[in-house]
Length: 307
Image 1 (spheres, rainbow, N blue to C red):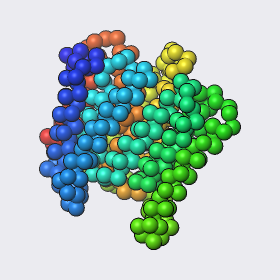
Image 2: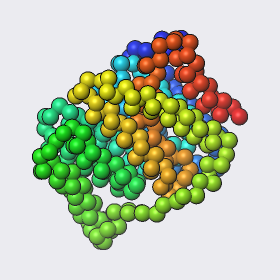
Image 3: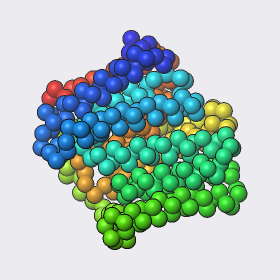
Image 4: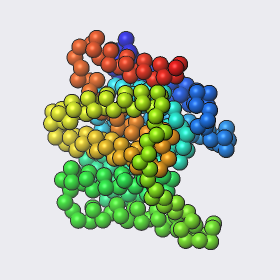
């Protein structure tokens, strides 16, 4: 039944995903009250929720526009379920903003496949990742993805490899000018925090252990089939699939490096992981196994909420 509902893109699917996202958002202060930031106003919290849901819509646009799935809505359902498993993803509004700009950069980067307005798309990608890094520094790790994408798309023009740096420099100049005008200082608006934290004790709880185990096991298993099946895709679309996989890898690295490990850092992982798992679900031929696989992804987050 679940697979039947989401096997095709329908308006009701977005309503269901919106409801799941809203439940995760509303239950966070009740389920994990000690982790909520009391300084955020109701309006700010509302903005965080809307930006997360807007990120879901951007993900759907990326997937449908670039044929990264079979035109279903599994990826947005999975994104919402990951939020339900780790509702702490709403905690850090800076990561929410940063992740949104990373998705916009990913949208522009994957569209390089069309070979149209390549310079503009590369500039936008560098610029958007630069904005993302202003809110959360370690999102800068996605910057090398631009050059990997150029190699995957077999672009050898030298100027293409320089353009992303121009986009990144542009946002740096804007930030410096803003800092001078507002703070009378050159770098106060450039919050470069290179701190890392390899202490994972904050994940030592039933919720985090279960959620991480779920995402890791389902993600690794799906990745094996995802990588194997890339060669079966149309040649022009293969780089896009590889970019999505590498995005997932870089997001996992950010989780490892994150200076504050409160669960919000997992938000970077949800979008690419959703696409990878979606592609695996599409390859399952036995309907009962497909229902079981997706059913587990639904049952586990719900179970975590009631424990």
